Length: 109
Image (cartoon, rainbow, N blue to C red; front, side, top):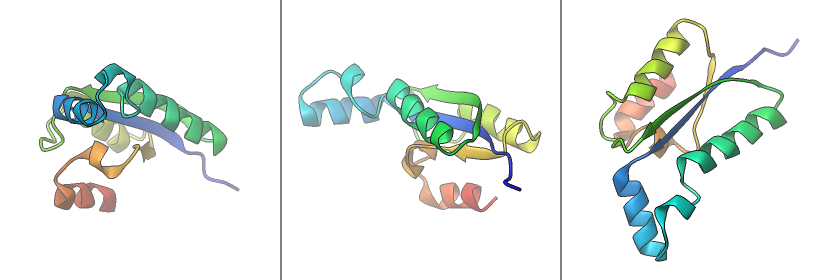
């Protein structure tokens, strides 16, 4: 029997992410592929294609990845501890955080 995955989708976009990407491509940040909405849509489709249950989406828009005291991130961790979700999806590990040692600690746990 396959395990039932209760997916938490996590999306983050910092002000720096948006402005650097937009500057590099010469267009408006709202149109870029790393937007919160595009991250959510990509991950939602991925969960659906795998037959997983999308339980909740957590977003931190405008927060730096160097700080792990972000409201959406903390809520997601609490929900994982409480069994509300048992799988976390992110577009890439840099969305979880920019301190890769700390990100590695979270992925081990």
